[in-house]
Length: 450
Ligand code: ATP
Ligand code: MG
Image 1 (cartoon, rainbow, N blue to C red):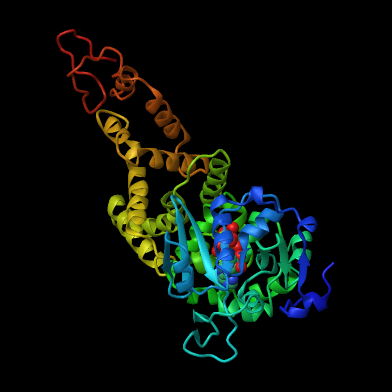
Image 2: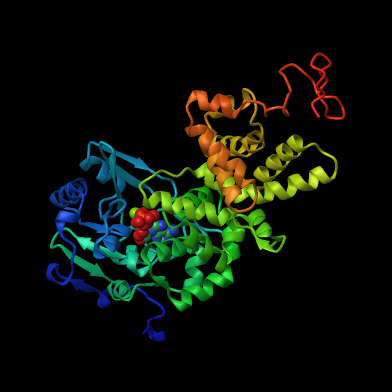
């Protein structure tokens, strides 16, 4: 049970809990060799060095961390001097990246909690942190982190886990609790709401009730975040292997409508009494693919997110007399230019999305040389998968999708047979034309084909 006294976690030095090596399950064998090298090297040079964040959280759960983040009291320039294979990056937070072939270990300096606002820490008038480059101590660094379970430090000096915010207790009870006052922390950085959803889904943790309450209240603030950052976050959210659950949770907290307003509008409409299912099926399929070790592409998911808005607009345009091809093209342009205000989409992504959408109408041609040309189109596979989704959710002919499934598996000979024009009525001969009554003119045989 969580009592109200524990609803706010504030880092106080006297409250620090140290879990010695025998009191936790993190062993060095689970830690990346390169991360260990970085930790030992910093220590050897006289600096403090800890693993922190998601890697400690995941190691405690017995999961393999996505990456290893190191934190130290050395400032970025000092870190650069310790490692030859190091680059300093970042404006909002200055960080060091230590490169080992393909693996990068991120090394950050303890961030400080500036008492007074100065040129190193800048808030906007909604309380959002725009710049935050104040260096500090570990006690201050704790305060800058988002969730208590993300604020556990693994100390290389004695292999202990250092906990200022009761993160270990929250970890055990599988709770995501913000450090400090939830609303203030969400105002400082509304992306923390997306992180809350991402971690809750990925870890199977529940959100602390105070965190949930604030999220309902300030969800709208997410719209102040630059669209490029929201695109990055959207990728993490939906390419994680838990896209469907994430989608449902984002909608529950009113966050999805900030990321994809046009999609949210369509989701509330029903077509012939049926909810629109294509997106749900796309998310589910992508989770299955990831579980099977297959790849998923961002453009395919974005194409699925925006398909309904494109369709609705295109149908409106056709009702106003525009031909189908033009209607879809204009609808795609409009939907994409609206979406990029929320999540910036790189050009190669929008181009691929347009191709997947544009190829949908080409599947109707099953006679002659068109099918073989479509088959070698670089986006054929994605467009076909999209056709399948449409067919499975009532948006396209199931028989058509099956035909294309068979066609791409068939050998050349079979393919040629499949794309031959339909056989003429009995008695017809090649080159003979049907009359307007449907009879075959064949005066030579005297057979009128009836
Ligand atoms: P993942 O498994 O996705 O890497 P993570 O918790 O490591 O999860 P990162 O984005 O790698 O997430 O960040 C590392 C750590 O930095 C976090 O655990 C958290 O302590 C801190 N952090 C990251 N982003 C924020 C933020 N927006 N606000 C506060 N703290 C943050
Ligand atoms: Mg991480």
